[in-house]
Amino acid sequence: MTSSARKRTAVLVSGRGSNMVSLLAAAADPAYPAEIVLVVANVPGAPALERAEAAGIATETVAHRAFSGRQAFEERLDAVLREARIELVCLAGFMRLLTPWFVDRWRDRLLNIHPALLPAFKGLDTHARALADGCKLHGATVHFVRSEMDAGPIVVQGAVAVLDDDTEETLAARVLTVEHEIYPHALALVASDRTRIEGNRVMTAETASDAASHRLISPPASNS
Ligand code: GRF
Image (cartoon, rainbow, N blue to C red; front, side, top):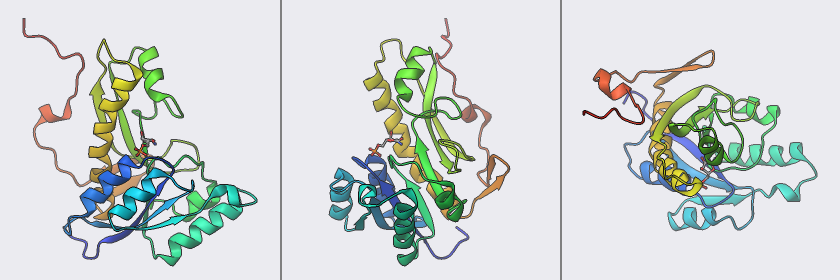
C-alpha cells in the first residue's frame, strides 16, 4: 500500500444497512485504507443506525423531512461531513436523490452501490426487471456518483447467474452477496488511490492474473 493515512470515510444510509455492515467489517482491519468514522441516516430510526452504534461508530441523523427543501437538507449534510473531516462518502442504500450542488462538492469522492449491472436497470425494481427481460447475468455496480441518477464512472461490478427457478427474492439475495463483496473492494481501490478516472472509465492499478478469471458466462457450457 502506497498511501499512508487511512481515508476518513462516512457511510450514508436510509434502511437496514447490510452494505454498511460489510464496509464496517472490512474497515475493522487496521490495514484497510479507509476508516469509517461516521454513519449518517436521513431517516430517523433507520435500522442501520443501531448496527453502526453496535460497532462503535459515531452516527448522525439528518432527517430530510425536517428541512424546508433539498438545498437546506444538503447544506446540513455537507456541514456534518465537513465537521467530521470526511474525505470519502459511500452511499449504501441511501434513498434520496442528491442535487448537482452536493454531487459537485463531493465529486470523485462520492461512491454509490446499485443492484444491477449499470448502465442496465437504473432506478428501482432492478431484480424484477432483469427477470422480466430474460437476463442470464445480473449483478451489482459500485460507481462514482454524478448528478444523473445511477450514473457515473464504474469502479467495480460483480455478476451472478440468473437461474431458471429464480424469483425476485432469490435473485436479490444472490446479488446482495456480491454487493457485500464488491463494495469493500471498490472502496479499498479508491481509498488507496489505485483508481484513475478517464472520462466515464475508471482505470485501476489491479494487475490481470489469468485470462479465465476475466470471463463470467451464464449458463456455463456443458462438457457433454
Ligand atoms: C442494496 O441493494 C443497494 O444496492 C441498494 O439498496 C440496497 C440497500 O441495502 N442501493 P442495505 O441497506 O445495504 O442492506
